[in-house]
Length: 97
Image (cartoon, rainbow, N blue to C red; front, side, top):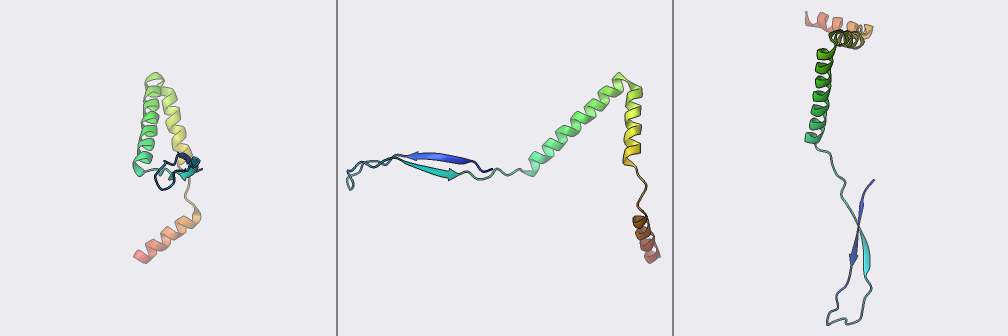
């Protein structure tokens, strides 16, 4: 959603046109704010530091809970490779030799 800036222009009286002119409302569209890579990096860095701090605190508080969390992470993130991927790797090995 783009933001709009509303400007109220009040014309000045000058010698060429001494008649009164009504004020004019004009809408000016604000440019979209772009997110820079530095902002994204800083957010990711902050989240990483929070997660590491929490893990460190859990380790200090209860060693067994920390070990359970680490083993659960290990089992959930390591899965067997897909058969088609193993076939591609074998094909590349055959071509290499």
